[in-house]
Image (cartoon, rainbow, N blue to C red; front, side):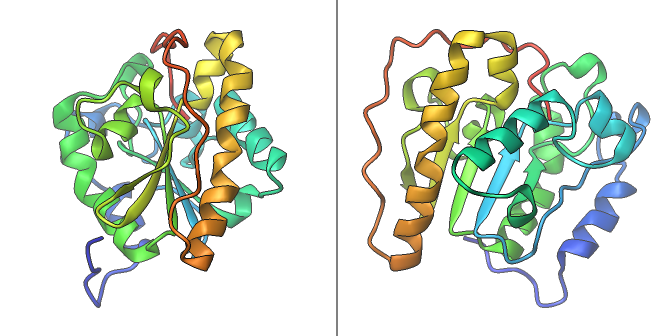
Length: 214
């Protein structure tokens, strides 16, 4: 995990994101979406990019995908107010298309700083683009729900909540995978290592990447 600069802060990152002009998404956004949550959050969730509603209000996961994320948090007795939520790109790609590699690269330093400042016990990736930051070349259909240690950081890759909105058969899969979040946190708190993750089915149908944003 990168050590944050002494003068850096989440507020400074957010202020820079809101006026960022590093990629073409700045020309089409209404509001940039830096992310929100407590600076001492134990769990940090990383999605893909803002959707239409997020673009309007400047907060992540406030649309239907966000409602399902809140439901999953509730299913493990966690609250949205206790976690930090952000995205790999901080501005909405037009028509909710996938973010391009150049757009992800332009936003990457902001996410790196957020990770360093929060120093979460567990990082939860939501969707293939945030997963790819930690698991290059992997397929989400094969590794979802399986906690791994990446350079000392426990990382849990999950499907994006919007996947269940497009593919109803994935809803229970996502709820089941989410049970690993409190187990991972408990292990991190007691320094007992990674909890045993249930074997992941590799024959789950991969979700269509249709507006997987929050």
